Image 1 (tube, rainbow, N blue to C red):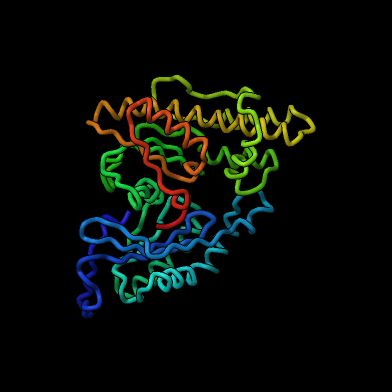
Image 2: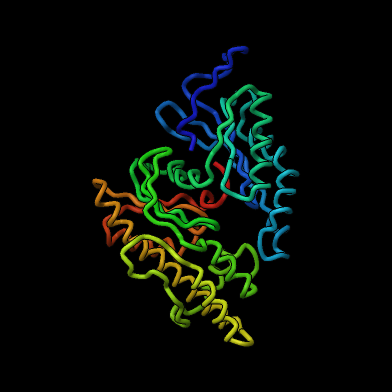
Length: 334
């Protein structure tokens, strides 16, 4: 996401304190319910080092509501954003005047949170006379594996998060071709709603995954929309509704019942993701030469069962799986 950053040249101030062989960027993320800031260094040879990375969670604020409340999220961002940026710079071991640019999420996301982070970054860029770089939330996810892995272009990307589920051909920074997308709900949103329906707590994705470890993934039969269809689009609305009805039909639910339903739901999502990705892989191969790389990114990419299923699919289809570390799967920087 920082590949397009150029060295800042302030015509009114000397630049002796800013070496020319690398760039230092302060990143700010506030698109949902976590306030994050990070300092990243990129050298001329393209190598990236994360000098600091801090995340302030809002789980305690939103847990009573079983989901993110946009107004409360925006207020929490306002209270934390300045201190998070200051801590990120301090922990990185640099000074404010060493920064070459500031990058901030500009959307998509919850508008109150996006504006808070973007305006804080804008004010800082003006005061330091350095560029402000508006970063697309989804592009940040798409390029996140390149922070830690050798991940040359092109590659096939499954972007699977709370608000988005897409399959993209990634040919470079800003060069994306969408091969498939959800026609209704996103996979992550379906996880969150399922957790809320079952009373598993917040955040929903990890809660469902934890409960699913104790259950039988074949206990409850659930629909798999578009399964086997010759395209790469997704649909999760019907699965969400079917899971709700299955839970209601259980009556008084024991932990075993919840575990079986959670495991069955998780397996169904995994089956859908793998089936749709299989068709996208065929599409990708028709327009690209090997070796073939497949990247999975976004919050749902942290789910171990889904990663395992995609790993098996890659082995069958001749792709190398590349996934960012779990700490870089969510909405946080870098």
